[in-house]
Every structure is written in structure tokens, then in C-alpha cells.
Length: 64
Image (cartoon, rainbow, N blue to C red; front, side):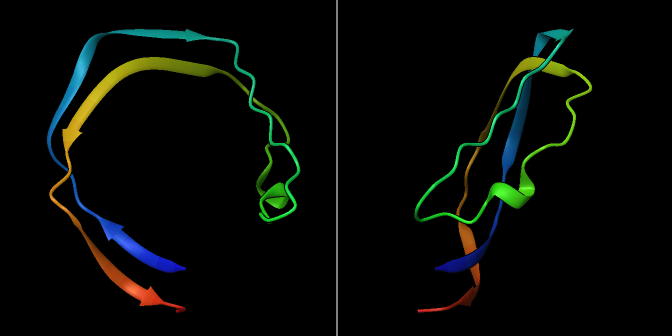
């Protein structure tokens, strides 16, 4: 139950990017309230590889 800011260093992206049709489905949950964020329409999709180093994060707000 925290809002955090995450950092990233040493970004790396692959050489290949694929573009095509996409599908994104959200499924109902008894413990999550995410269905209002479900997409109305998917216009397309991209796939690529990437990586980064995770130096840590900062707690911006805690509800606990």
C-alpha cells in the first residue's frame, strides 16, 4: 500500500521491433479494482526487447 517512484539506469534496447495487431484483455478480480482501466479499443501492438538497471526507489506516500 505505497506509492513509489522507481529509477532506471543503463537503458538498452534490442535491434528488432515488430509491429502488428494487438490484444489486451483485463479479467475481473475479487481483490483488484482495475476494470475501469480496461482498453476500449486496441489500435496495434509493438514487441521489442529492452533492459535496464534498477538502482532503487523512493516511497512517495504510504497508506500503512
